[in-house]
Image 1 (cartoon, helix red, strand yellow):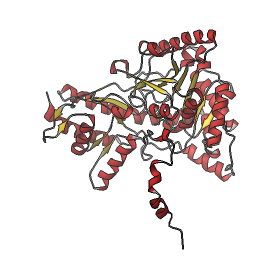
Image 2 (tube, protein in one colour):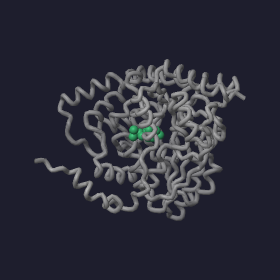
Image 3 (tube, protein in one colour):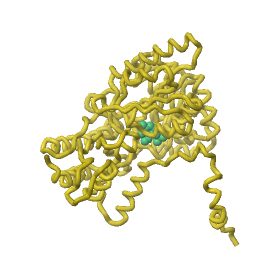
Image 4 (spheres, protein in one colour):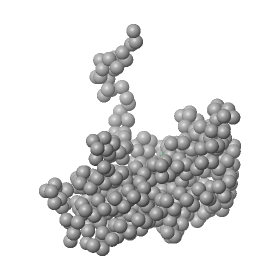
Length: 437
Ligand SMILES: Cc1ncc(COP(=O)(O)O)c(C=O)c1O
């Protein structure tokens, strides 16, 4: 008879509070996934929900490039199924170098490139390599998941509360009080959740502050302040917004910058797990050892297929043109619809479309009472009321460590059709009309 393992777990339930090390007690799962679970449950009950929550793509609207899919199959058929080198196959590393040379005018040495299974392993490895226990990590909020990486590495997180006026990006003035103690600054542009893009002025000022601080530290032989530049959405900029890199703006930033990238977002390939970073070779070497011990490299066939596509600019260009147009149309339709509502006096507004697959929207409902008598004391009450009344699911900025009560939320268009966007706008308008003021 088979051993009933579950019964042995049940009889040892008292170990639950003791078996894992105490440093893990405060590690939380993703709040966004919890909201996604709620959406699934409501749909299972037969409710129509417009799901603008997740930072992922519905392959019906946003498939990966055909050539990528075909090439992965070919590589598998050709027997490319064994371990790749921990640093990444040479073809992928060379293709990344060629990509940045072509698109960004930056020539990286090949030994600065490290592959990872998506952007997360290079991000995690950056923290683990740079941040010692108690080291200060400065990052803007709202931000995607940075607080978890700070926690996992026992850093001291200094979240900087950003404002819509600066596109939810931090300024050099906000960074200044933390400069002398900071070990790592984390910037993401185009940014999740705000859908905004850092400007040349702001990025230039941040780089200058880092360079000045590091000139001082170098004199003293101190460890430098590093910048983690998360650029996973870099190909997705719209309406005149331009993607900039720290090294492109200030080449002297090269020894202090780890830039992270992946096919996850700009080829709608979140499930394929191909990412990489470029880092100073001495940092890359340590990161490589960590990624290698975790086995967190992309599958060999996917690396080779990605390399082949990255080396084919015309094929890539056609895919990206179409893909970007689809994203942009949805975002712009949302923006126009929300601006119409704002003009009609409804308590909603949004920032302009700029990048990624997100739109920053503000609902001015916190502290009010819904027409059905439901009190709306905080962002979570508003989220639940909109979900149940309008059938619109979104993620509040509070899930990205932004302070409560602001009313700012993230709308994601990766899983919706244009018809869904129209329907979302109509539902929001119906729910918000009673609040017209
Ligand atoms: C800003 C940002 N960085 C990194 C990632 C992780 O990307 P990957 O799925 O390639 O690990 C995400 C995913 O949502 C993201 O939004």
